[in-house]
Length: 231
Image (cartoon, rainbow, N blue to C red; front, side, top):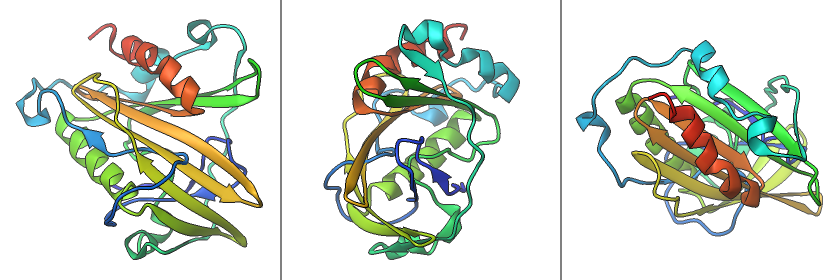
């Protein structure tokens, strides 16, 4: 499965990337996804149902009413495709522009919403929904996230900007059939940005919530509940 270079949720002004096949463990945090704890029914043993279309996923996203006061939906940002080079992780570097960090997965059926939160300090949280066969969601997501946590530290050059990235695999709450969680820390220009990304697969739907760690933890349950309410 391919992953695209994308801006990390607007929580950092810089773009980062990360993906397939690196080895080692993770160190500290930053925005992105994490490797999965597979507790639950294996995908190949589940009842297969037809994937949902992008139009069917859209109303399953969280909205301001679900999130509560202080949240405003952010306008969709245009995709950015800058020249990206990875230093310190050869496997990621080979992917070039076909890798990301904290950005979108490349399943064709998808829906996304991002929100800013002004409750105390400006923060952001983003939800993405994907649908495909359970086996494809399981295999592709697991492979990508395992690769993303494979290099604990590396550097990304986005155009002329250098970004130091550290990744830390996290344990995810016991939700759905499979789950992944990770922290990434992006450091550039003397500033750090930490993003948590937790992804849960429930049958043929993948729920991905990323952004400020506290907001991800706060809204993951309700995102999964709404996405699977009618299933």
